[in-house]
Length: 169
Image (cartoon, rainbow, N blue to C red):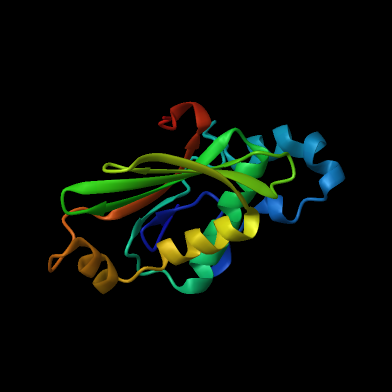
């Protein structure tokens, strides 16, 4: 389902992003994971398959926060990573986040810059959340200023995808 330029299979009433895993009791997670996936993706697509957006976006802050929270839950429970690609004139940076523990409190942050190469560090969930919200709520003027031109030629992107598809150093 599309809403404000973002695909999310869990959009609820009035276009709000909902993430059923956020309300699932921890002791029921393993028992209901297969049933949840079947129920949330009747066409066989992974439940996180459409968590993506471009920046700048016309989504309100609450909707972006909900998308980030949903993505963090999927990173914790699935073998997926979140990728934010920022494009500037003549270069791009890529930041990847992958959960390193099964409770989603620590994440590996991999940052790639065309000029500087790869840098990896471990960061807490709160840092990932704050960084993603800041990146995804960037305005059109901020993106244009960063690129050094009137309008960015390519939009920045955010996507959740399988870990096996992530670029590595």
